[in-house]
Length: 429
Ligand code: EPZ
Image (cartoon, rainbow, N blue to C red; front, side, top):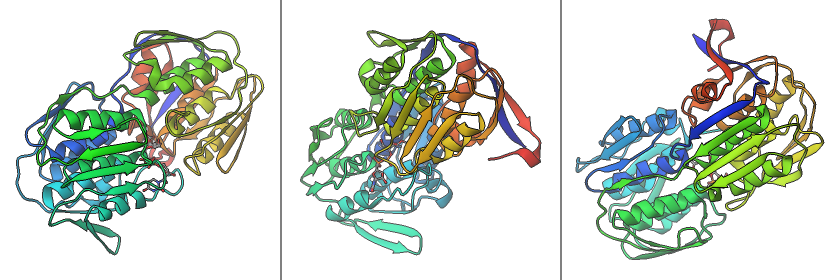
């Protein structure tokens, strides 16, 4: 039996929302805890499909984990293991890749397949693998199974990333944290989630300098000890909620989310005509009246406008008076799926390659739409909140990978959104 969210928008949103810990911080942190002796605890962790998948990987590798009202506890007592990641888990999300380095340190070997995740265009893992090989790992593809071994452990090296990949930076930081000797990583990603991982590892006893800059200097240590850690808030969830206000109208306060995490997206919303007030780690977002187009925007690596925010901001601009366009410089197919669905609502939208172009329309029709990836799926919810008619969104599994109970959060803010069962013939995954 499939299910969908029925949404009747055109109702302004009012209230306060506490922003949960960042999915893209929690997932690498979980993998990194595999390298530690003793228990690690992470707090304010949202109950996401990807967190559950990562818990299954952790347990399959031999670890113990428990999750109770936002607190995630992970520990690993088993000595040996073969580091085999089941293909259905490795293929379920991109974040399975974060287990490569920790498993190599713990078992001396790891087996996986090409990681899954949102279809945003080609997403190779060559930078992860090139760095691990240069640190002494041996790599072999057995058909579609990747086997990495490092019987004598990993050794420090100097490595230049050919592009500032967030995931590859995190993989190589974890690899270097327990490698023999010193590692210098140049051209690394500077995202807040990268800094968060470095702070956690240093709290566990690692020696990582330069997080947040483009060069990491890491002195390997022989042992890491688990600890309790509060991951940073989810800047993309916060941006998504801000986009719902921009789309539906109203006034919402985002709690426990410092503005530095989402400045570029807040600037775009302000340029479009939203009222933004920052108070310590609360952000007030207000939209009264009609938004205006913002011209051409470009996504970029941090501290630029984040690629993950692009679909939900685009959705909020579908009814903004005038022209807007967003070019995603990170992924080749960020907009193709959601643009098709926006058009079903009568949006004036074109998607050519990396660029989505919008000419605002005064009204959006209700439509039946299907989520095809995480952020594009959330963007359909944002768009549906602008229409006074009823919309139906299925493909909810994609959205649940990265948002905990989006309907519950939006209902509490005054949105009309209900979960409905779909007859089998209508259901999409
Ligand atoms: C992380 O993905 C995030 N996921 C993504 O969020 C985010 O969109 C992305 O960083 C960019 O900020 C997690 O942290 C779990 P990349 P990641 O490696 O690490 C190319 C979401 O919605 N590349 O920075 O996979 C790649 O093809 C997700 O929460 C290589 O060519 O992103 C892409 O074009 C979606 N070789 C670009 O780099 C590599 O070895 C950026 O990818 C690695 C990446």
